[in-house]
Image 1 (cartoon, rainbow, N blue to C red):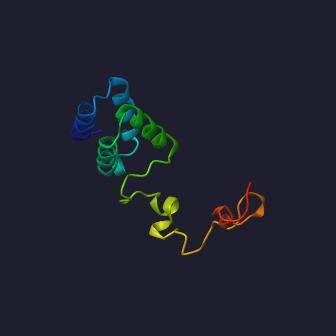
Image 2: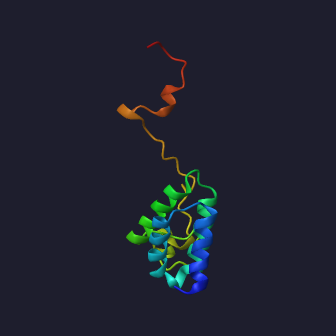
Image 3: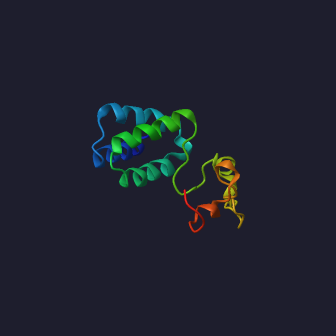
Length: 118
């Protein structure tokens, strides 16, 4: 890692009170991601900014990096983005009703009340 990159990691660690053990893990993970370093460190800053427990969440994100499943927040230019998220395609319901039948084959409408006792 360059000295600038090490400084960015140290700034992130200072901002979120991350210990030396996590800093070491972060440096190790980021040294393997130099091609996406800027995007990744920015994304980690955003992610940790909304965390109740930044050290715990960083540990999860580092595990994702080690497993190869981490994707920078906001999509960006991560090489796995298209494969993992369908390249921006909409996977919404498309207006279909996935509710259908409840347990026992009854329509969910059957639970609306009105009709006999139980």
